[in-house]
Length: 182
Image (cartoon, rainbow, N blue to C red; front, side):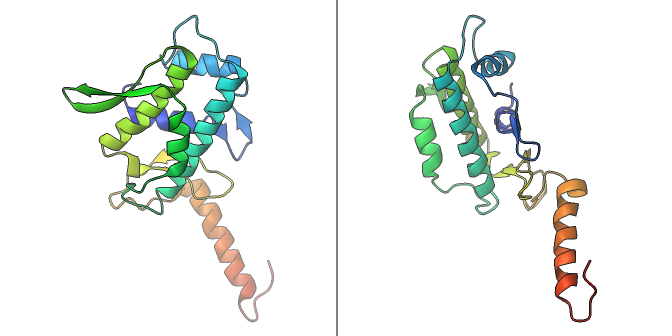
């Protein structure tokens, strides 16, 4: 993928919180997922350890994107990301466009390091603060906040926004004096 933000969103969304489905539940599916995105070569295969690393990275990224609602600038240090990134084979490379992170290994560890490099690409391109996860607790789907003031909370106003607002409305109605319980 050419757009680092799309790769990060795509990776985080490999687990659907609402449906409790994981599109990378095994080393074989992790291998296929990374290969489809050009992050590993045709002979590379994932191990159980690689899968555990991928799941930890994904969930750490989901948590970091949740914090982008709290930190509109997205600039605060996140120790969870630092821990997840620390175990992956990366190096700083100086390019004509400035410094970038790049994988120093091939195979699945290098592919996962490519996802981390995409995170840094989103940071350097100014997109990181716009990457968020839905605030609806049953959803947590990752999305790009394209709103002008970066205030979008839900992946979809029609679905998750409506659910949240309906729940809040019902809760208010139940606490109003003289109201009938719904």
